[in-house]
Image (cartoon, rainbow, N blue to C red; front, side, top):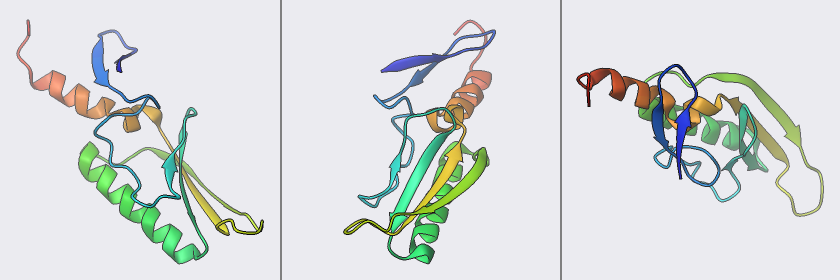
Length: 117
């Protein structure tokens, strides 16, 4: 799926079915995910809070390396699920969806191309 960033100039973005860049580093653990809402929550679930936080920090570092600038995180949400068989802690980073779509990368790529391309 290719989408365009709304601005005075059009920039093509290569997005997956969730609307984030196909090149965005994904949280590696099966219980972690990028969710599909504005200021997308990126979720890290685990029975051990330090482990969930470490995975969140690792993902945040790799995403900032990929993006080439700090990720716009507006909030960190911590919740728990005490239901039988569920991971106890749920850490969510609420991230700017344009960052997760790779818009800053596309903007930098656009500024390095000669006019008329």
